[in-house]
Length: 50
Length: 220
Image 1 (cartoon, helix red, strand yellow):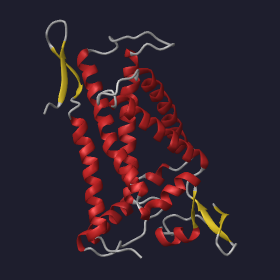
Image 2 (image 1 turned 30 degrees about the vertical axis):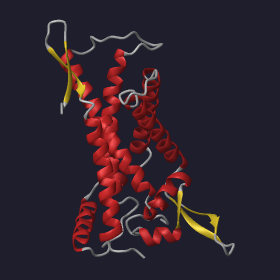
Image 3 (image 1 turned 90 degrees about the horizontal axis):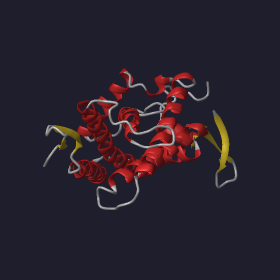
Image 4 (image 1 turned 30 degrees about the horizontal axis):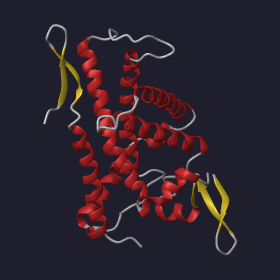
């Protein structure tokens, strides 16, 4: 998986264009994982609130 | 600070505590709509939903920038920046929560107006949104607007690369943060705070049950 998007300028040099859009799924997955882990923790492990 | 607006089943008024002034709630929801619009206009085209996103994106970015500047000036001049500052008491609270989580005992102490987690989320949003706003403002140099012509030579290619990376990093981080923010806002035990962001208040009972009156004094 690439981390960056690059292109070439008129002289053939690499020019940074930003982060790779493949990372979209990494960040979305991190959010989903955080939600699932917290929900499971609250459902099964956390002390019950009154 | 304390008003009596909602009414209990018995008919007697429930005392309430104002948590968010109307102006702060309006800022929150304007910022929320802007961030969701900005995320949609940046990532939907990447996911294959094609539409003319550029104008919606930069105009929404300008609205968000104005809203953030307003909030920044208001919070620094008319409110206390210490309200959101993460101090020693917050760090102690975080460590106590961590210990309680590991030992699986109850929450050890009550927070003030904002918990450590709420202050941390606010800090993350501050850093990420300010990064997006500053880099986005620079990127307006690429856009044709009624006020200026595009100027791609404002910065060198290498500098533009850094600007793009920071803007993309802020945008991608916002996906994770918005997902988590919405999830926590909808959790049953947090709904009182979500209601406060909608209607402004929590009840006096919620204030005494969930928060530490010595750390958030509303009567004096």
